[in-house]
Image (cartoon, rainbow, N blue to C red; front, side, top):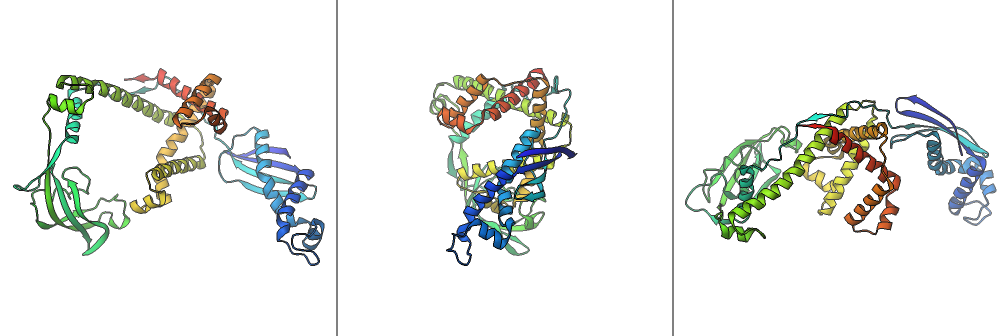
Length: 427
């Protein structure tokens, strides 16, 4: 097999002319014959025993050509790509056989290549990062969360429901007088003011008492996931079975001892929260910085990027999402049915994130090239060890599963991002 010609035919599209020698072609034909002969009936021969020459004489010498070529294409094309020194992405491949005989064949393949991009001014990017300051307000918010977790529920009998209460309700929704799917439940525990239901629903329950039955009217948002309910005016029949309120524990030393493993006084508890918040907010600030720098890089990279790269990335994200769903006992098809989506609409939701991800990766790869950034063998070894610990696998097995070239490329990209971050002007 050999590369005859390599030509750029348009932006990000490359045509390769590939020749497959006769010996390789004959071996592939023989392999196809051995696989198919068991299903071929030729008069005068037992099924599966007809010689290749007899079959070719009866059906033509080309009888095995198509399948043989199909078997050869992948390796032949990959060898040609490697010889041409081009980087190809997963996209449609246009194949055209220009010549074929028992002495071999020649084909042309048009493939999609990685884009040629440029990036400037990636050093000194100015961004305004979120604050990591630990305020008394934030400390009190964490204390309130802890008190909520330690709260107990008490049934209310002497007043109507109010914001903050938990209303245990039966409800059923109707559109134009007809009950709609997903609009009914019994003994549903709804925290009033939580915003978990569509706008106007929770507010209209406030002021009603236990055992009351009443009707409320609401309008679904225009961007609601169920197509038939977008912007629809509906009514819900409601019955309040019970009203509950949360009784919060007092913030005192006894509460602290029950809540914290280390602190024993309120002051010590607040200091513990301050320390934990400082670490958490610093991580959030760091993530915010990287996200804003990624936004800047995606805007700075220039070049004609194939749509296939965005589509492939979106598909990768959907597959990752499917894996997460399966780990939680659900699959993608069930999820899409539940939220009223199909694969195309789900892919559309990932489009912006996919585009940003592709652009940032291309930008960082270009910075790696411009700055001559390399990942060392030591970098690779450290990453292999990290992956082994993360997935609880033997180090040697990780090394077999993860190509070191790909791992080094990822580590070099990480170093490029560190360069961008270290040189950024962060306010």
